[in-house]
Length: 359
Image (cartoon, rainbow, N blue to C red):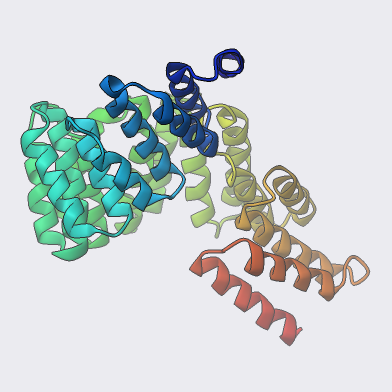
């Protein structure tokens, strides 16, 4: 409603730069990224020189959000008086624009010159560590991450990154060490989703799937209103779908996550998980219904189409009158042509085509 209020204000006073800027901020919060960028561009055209830096930063941030990285770099470079926000924003825009050396330099400048807040410095060290991992390997990344821990109010992202690094390189000793540090965040709402996923991976890597389910279930019982935890448990149970009851439970957990998370998390793929759980348990009719719901809600998500294709394939094999192969091929072609599927999804689709040919 406030966004509509600012829109009305702009209709009456179209040269009010402050109103354009506030409209851009509200639209950004609402996830309307293109509209936000347009509003900031209008504000920049009208704003006075004394506050132009703030609009440059807002506009640059919104351009990063819509993938116009080189333009975002230009906006951040126009800032006259550098701040932490402008410096870190420029570094991120440069990184997204694949100007890696310049990005690293900008992050270092922000770290050493633009803030004395050790919490923010810890965040910057994590960003530098991610770049170091790309170009210098895990040891240099670990060094930077360990530096981030030594600061006051260390970044939680540093702990996530270190634990992920340990899991990727199967350093179980380091994983256990970091997991003990992460345990103090198990009641922090903003950390729960990351903590639950990493916790399950630690035990899965150790071959203890039962412990993984047990620990994530404990978190669900501690925080039953957190949709992200129900989703983590659902995905974990699907990974362990060899047992029929687990697959059925996975679908039910996914349904709970869907109901709880509609207002505060990205639920675009949760219905896919529900359908997949029902599919694995052998309830193909309900799996098909869930997949159809997913398509109706989120027609632009390739995973929804892939799950629907799986359900239709099973239905076709059991009922030759239900659908034709041409309809299935049409859906596969739609995903490949219009949905930009990931490498794994594209592989699945290739395997699907081979399966159809062999039938």
